[in-house]
Image (cartoon, rainbow, N blue to C red):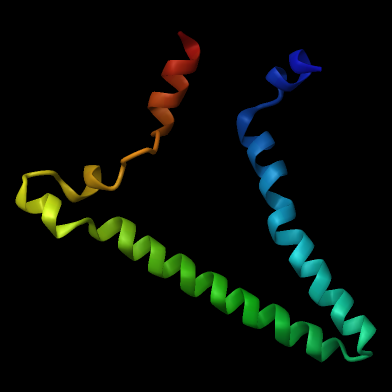
Length: 98
């Protein structure tokens, strides 16, 4: 089984693991609309969830791209300052090929 998993591209494995994070809540809002016999209620909950997700994503994106002013004073570039604990695609692929 492990041998089969190593042949599947990493991008496909990652997307197949993260897609239920979006699909299950979307399905539950559909189910809510069916159970209360009003699809509009289900869509209203879905839209509220989508607005909160997009808003949270924009806030996190802004915080990640702005950088920490305390690190800027020390001479660390804003782009490199928020990379603590994160791997870049080029580094991870190089490490795996060794």
